[in-house]
Amino acid sequence: MTDRRPYNLLSVIIPAHNEQDNAPACASAVSRLLDSYDIDYELIFVDDGSTDRTWLRLTQLARSDERIKAICLSRNFGKESAIFAGLENAGGDVCAVMDCDLQHPPETLVEMYKVWRDGDGVDIVEAKKRSRGTESGGYRFFAKLFYRIMNRVSGLDMSDASDFKLLDRRAVDALLRMPERLTFFRAMSSWVGFNTETVYFDVAERRSGKSDFDTKTSLKYAVTSITSFTSAPMQLVTVLGVITFIIAMIFGINTLYNKLTGNSEAGFPTVILLQLITSAIIMFSLGIIGYYLSKIYEEIKQRPRYIISEKLNLDRRD
Ligand code: UDP
Ligand code: MG
Image (cartoon, helix red, strand yellow):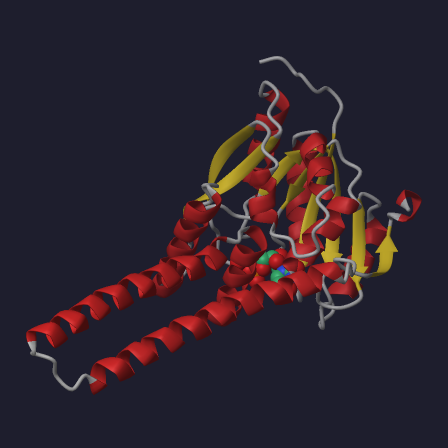
């Protein structure tokens, strides 16, 4: 195949939250591999408000190699914000996002780069999980359920999707032009469209430290992602309303019939049951609406996605 893009800078964006041991290991593993393939690169570590020595390690790394850039966020803004901080500061013709704990194999990164470079106009290369590593059965179940709902409501197939992606400058710019504050990288990078190729990888074990995403945060993440990406749950309210209306009609006709035929019983339990069901639906619906209102409120404040407190080896890009 012909080398369509002869000279390219690859920006690798690595969000890191409390990764003091993983960050140096990740930096050396990725740079060694990219060097061996003669790929021109920069590593952009984004310290997402770590409370351990991650920033110190990143400072040392940045000092020893100017291709290692580091951004320090003023507090923990979450992985999504960290990814966007990295993308906004990337100077590459192509950008990749990968985890700091080496769960995303660097070899796959090279594979993705090659698909982009040698492919005919490939803009996005997404890495999908072939296997889910050591995730528990329950987690796997909820992850599946989440992606099924996302697929239904947004029309984007994101099953086994990860944040491990490589994007051409065109796609990065399109992504960065999206103005929303509450971002969902995984879905937004599909939404922008473009020519997309897929590679598969096996999720490795986390190198050290522990995952930030336990069941509770994952659930919160799932709800935020769904609501920031689709308004379908709000339409659920309408559907529930229609269903309640139909049930009420049936009950009404039934009661009328019983009354006319003289079989009417004291319907107290039915009344209470109906009351309970309706109020449950109303409260549930109000909850959904309230959730969206809070999202609108957050968006309308137009706050920045993140605040940078320090940058290393990136000063010339301001
Ligand atoms: N991460 C981050 N900010 C956070 C939580 C996580 O930047 O608030 C980073 C973390 O350092 C890692 C990546 O996001 O590089 C994935 O996190 P983790 O390994 O905890 O998630 P999992 O692999 O379990 O999905
Ligand atoms: Mg991980």
